[in-house]
Amino acid sequence: MQLTNQKRLAAKILGCGVHRVWINSDYIDMVASAVQTEDIREFIDQGIIKAKPVKGTSRARARVRLEQKRKGRRKGQGKRQGTANARNPRKNRWMRTIRAQRRVLKELRTDGTLDAAGYRHYYLKAKGGSYRSIAHMRTQMGVEGVQFKESEA
Image (cartoon, rainbow, N blue to C red; front, side, top):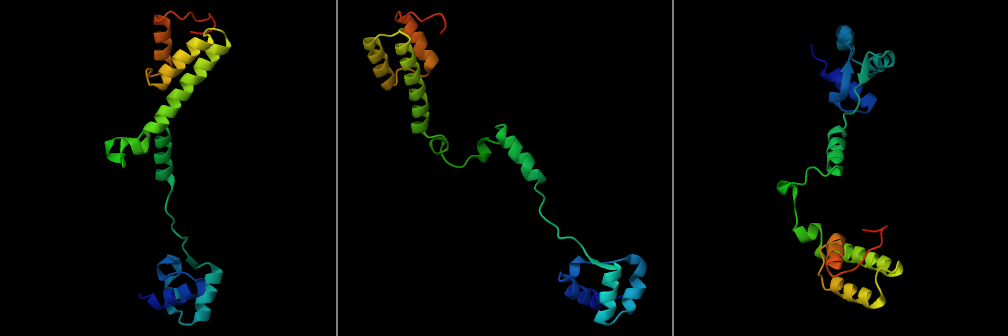
């Protein structure tokens, strides 16, 4: 049973493609006998012929992937494009560490742990890149005899 012509007419009326036309299998004989556009239009009104919904691209997998990326997964060798410096620039790393160290030095100066000369000494050492981190800076200060307040360290 050929329904090519009927599907073409229905597609034209429904304003969709031929492959989206759905015909109720119980009424195939009736639809096959229909030749005119008016007959097809009637079947559409009765619900015997309908347009299937448009298939979209599912975002479910994309959402799962994004969730994993937020947890820090999917960052292995195979996913990397760009040098280490492009992904996490040396300058940004330096700015993060030096700003943190300078913030701590200022706190130590304001609470009286360091005097102006001590502050200047450690500030310049930090600027020179002597300390990897705040913890490293504090241990070096401890070794050099700086006494920290009880609330700190």
